[in-house]
Every structure is written in C-alpha cells, then in structure tokens.
Image (cartoon, rainbow, N blue to C red; front, top):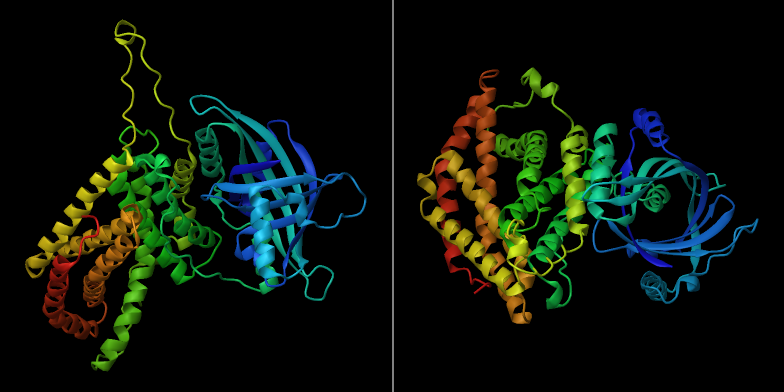
Length: 533
C-alpha cells in the first residue's frame, strides 16, 4: 500500500531517555525488535535523490520498504511490501514497488545510475510503540515510537563503525495534523527534545563516508503547487514558509546535535531572517487562517537570531577587521580577549537552538506547511437561523488578488529603499541599520514571489535583472554594517586596553566615505526594472 507519511522525529538527550520511556509506558506499549538492511548503489544514486530502500525484520516478519522525501519537512512518500516470516533474509527486489509514485522514483533513479544495488549499512533497534488519542479541535490518533539502538556500517569488517540511535517519532495515523503538532510540542517541551532531519540511513551514510560535519544547507526557491486552481493565498504562504524551513531545519538539526560549524550557524540565521520576512509580508494573503500566527511565532525567532548573532558576528567581524588593521599599522590586539564575564556564561549555539521556545516554533511552522486547506463554510439556510452565529472566516486570497497584494508590498519596499538611499548619510546609526534590514526584506520577498510573476521566460529574466540591481547596495550596506559593529567593538575594548584606540580612529575615519558609497549604491535601485509591473 502506498502512503504519504506525516511525522515528526526528535532526538532525545541521553540524560532524558529514562524519563521519555517512563512517560511513554504510562499507556499500553508494544515492544518490537527491528533489524534492517539498507541498500543503495555504490555511487549512492538513491541517497542523492532522497530515496531510502530497505529490508527490515519486524519481530518475526520481513518487510521491504522504499521511502522518499515529499513536499515538505513533514511529508514522506512510503510504500511497504510484506514478505512473510522466512528465517533467512529475503533478497532485495525494487520491482516490488512498481506502480506506486515512490516506486517510480526508485526505478528512475536506478535506471539513471545503471549500477547494481549493494548493502550499505544496517540497524538494530528496539522500538516501543503506543497509540495516543488527541482530543479537542485538532482531534487525531498519533503513533509514538521510541527507538533505541545503533546504526552499523561496514558490518563484520575491520572498518566496522557504529552510531547510537535514541529518538522519538510521532506519526499521524488519522485525524487533524494540528493534533500531531500539539502532541509534538508538548513532548519536545517537557523532555528537552529537538527536531532532527537526520534519518537512520543518513547516519549510516555518514559513517561510511567518515563525515563528521556536513555542508550547510542554503536557501532554495519556493516550490508552488502546480495548477492555478490549487494556488491561493494560503498555498502561497505554505510554499514560502516550507522553503524557509528547508534551509533552517537541516542546519538547526546539526547545531542542536552539537555542531559549531560557522557556516551552518550563518545559514540558519539567513533562514530565520527570510522566514521573518515571510511572516511579516505575507500575513495579509490569508487573513482568515487561524494557523498563520506570526505574532506568536516571531518572538522566539528574534531571540534565536540575536543570540546566534552575538556568538558569530563579533568573531567574524574581528576576522575581517584584523588583517586590514594590521596592514594599516595597528598594534597587535585582540578586542575579544578579556571581555566581561557575561560572555563566558553565554549559551552555546546548541543551547540556543535546543531552547523549548525555538523548538516549539519549528514544530508549529512545520505543522502549518502540512495542514490541509480549511473547509469552506456550509451555505446558510436562512437569515433567521444564522442571526447569532459567528461570521465565517474570510477565505484566502485568489491568485490574482494575491498578485495584486504582493505588487503593492514590493512597490512599497522598493520606494522605501529609494527614499532611504537619498538621505542615507544624514540618518543616525540605528536608522542606517534599519535601511539594511528593509533592503533584505525587499530582496527576500522578491526572491519568494518571482515565480508567481513568471508567466514566461521573459518574466523570469526580468526578476533576475531586478535582483541583480540590488546586489551593489546589499554588498555596500553589508560592509558598512560590519565596520559599524567593529567600531562599537573596539570602542568598548578601549576601557580595557588603550591599543584599541587605533582601530576606533581608523574605522571612524572611514565611516563617512562608506556612507557615501552606500548612498550611491542605493540610488542605483531606482533604475532597477520592476518585474512585478
């Protein structure tokens, strides 16, 4: 049977496992031993397409499964084939999945590779499962599965390596996805769990490749549903939020698990800024949606963004500034040495990402992208019957109305950028910083919605030309902001070491020149060909 899974997967800190298991056992649980073998080609053709193919012994029975990534972080395509209770492991056969959507993807990937399947890794897991009923407006039945065990690569060879598994999966069996979201938020908050994008197959692949740090995930273009009949204000919101999460979730998952990779932190912050733009600029597309709760979502995003910035920005600025200062003849000096004691006690990047408020927002946002369209209100029988009823919520904007709304938002931000450019040098420091943030909002919104105006190839080129006109101003304002941060940092350091005064003077002397450069770059935006007209 082919299915679309909707599930959350959380990592469990080792010191919380006992409490999670105890909480799970408050209901009726089923214990199963799962021994799985994972297959791919030698060149990892399936992994490259987001496909997992496995044989798994579930208790005494064998099941062959193929999974693939779906439309967003919650959706997974899956097809299972029961193979009986043979004592020996059956052979792997991709043909068993023929005629299903995920099976067709599997066939295509194998045909493109042309290489035979080989066993890549195995798992040995003890799973405890329990069905939980969620009552209320978001009524649902959710299967909770606690998996504890290991992933093994190069089994039986001198290169054998293992990775522990300790995770909780919540899968929607039936009902409303918001019930799944509510349950996931409650368990992640109570037990300090964090959302993970790393599958067991991916753990094994990393063991095989001996990879400890994976590449940071960068922004991707939103994927809007095909067919104009499926595209309204709510669908636009969901697609754009999903594209932000596609950048945020993998980076957040790595950082929560302990990575301190600077690029992952940087890309997570970009993803948060893009998401905040989406929350601010797209709220009007579906005024009636009770799930697009920007006012509740934004504060934890802001807190995480600033906390991660406090960790990263100062160190990055010093890395950029010190070579320039050295070349200018500045005395050797580290402005970060000997800072106040508060910096020593500051939370790590992992602490910030694992924070319950941030994890709760991630769960809610993923749920929003997976929620089905709200049903239309039933027609009213008569005025007398509906006198005391609550008026139905407004419907999402149609595609044409959404385009008109987005044109106004783009035009407003464009005019702001042009106006700010003409007076940039006369603005105070905080206002100059605000100009940079507004320009980023304009850029991100343009990137988000450009496909909605791409009626043909010519429209696509117009959007690219417009974004190209923004880049000089983005670069100038970025450099200007870095130097403003550096100036504040070195000025603060003068209280501890007089050598910092050289940098204060050097950056102060450059300030006016760079402000003029920013003004000129911003003025160039007025000439940009607006693709939304």
